[in-house]
Amino acid sequence: MRDPDISNSLVSIIIVTAGMKDYILSCLDSLRKQSHPLLEVIVIDNSLRPELKSRISREFPSVKICPGIRKISYCESLNQGVGLSKGEYILCLNDDVILNKDFVQNGLRGFDLNSKIGIVSGKVLRFGGKLIDSTGLFLSPWLTAGERGYGKLDRGQFEEAGYVFGATGAVAFYRRSMLEDIKTGQDYFDSDFGIFYEDLDITWRANNNGWKGYYLPLAIAYHLRGGTVRIEKNGLDKRCARFYLNDELYFNLVKNRYLAIAKNEKLIDFLLRLPWIIIYEIATWFLIIFSRPKLLSKFLTLPSLVVSAFEKKSRKGISKLLC
Image (cartoon, rainbow, N blue to C red; front, side, top):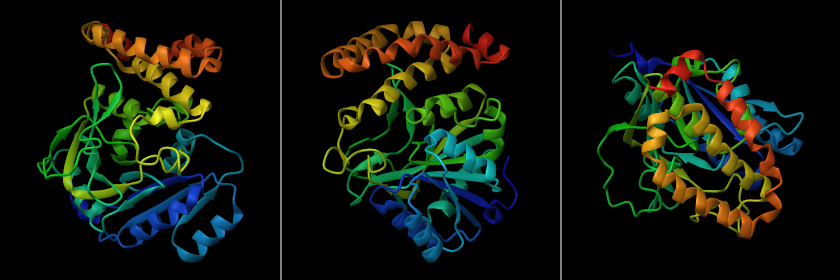
């Protein structure tokens, strides 16, 4: 089933910024050049920098800015943006992303293929356009968020459109009706996650509820991997992100994987993947013990967080877990 007049649909674009390096100005400039005319751009400004708000207002007067009065998390900020938005389709962007001028127009075509397509991924390249950042999110055998094509040279090997698990959180295009269908309470994105793995969690929930993801290679974006959270000289566009994160972010990265598993994985699938998971767990805790021992005490809170994640499942969700 096709959506009627999708080319005339309002698209809400939500950008969360902490104001690092003013990446958002280049991002907004790429939105101003989009060929799709019906755009609503909402910036959740967590920079607490009045001068940044003033500059955005001056250079991009049509942008709606919601300045943070406190440091709220990435997921809380996305929820705020979705709640304020009016579009039938919602594009969530990191502030270190630049879109090709036809990204929105081409991305909408994915939703037009099937009413159960709730997530669209474009081809996301690194700055410079030679290396691939993501051509779709997938669930790895050890239950982590994998990026298809991550770090590979773009040789045209991902030029075929097709179904994928989901989209990277840096450039994630969602159908509003899907977000409404899978939300928990008032949360579209789980506030307990803070940042990291929120894209896997929302994709996993969507798939468990019958929604699908689709990849379109003509929807092209560019991403400065790590620009939002990593220090420039220590990890921009580099692999192994966890080595370049501060302790708080590192804790979130590890913790949120467990929360996503607790909320979404079926027991039978977990058991089938157990050998891979055990290997990953050994490596994970080896690194924590020998490189971040100060974090061990913080992980004492993990059991209660996992229990809370289980409690977010509906009765129907729990019954699916046992199938």
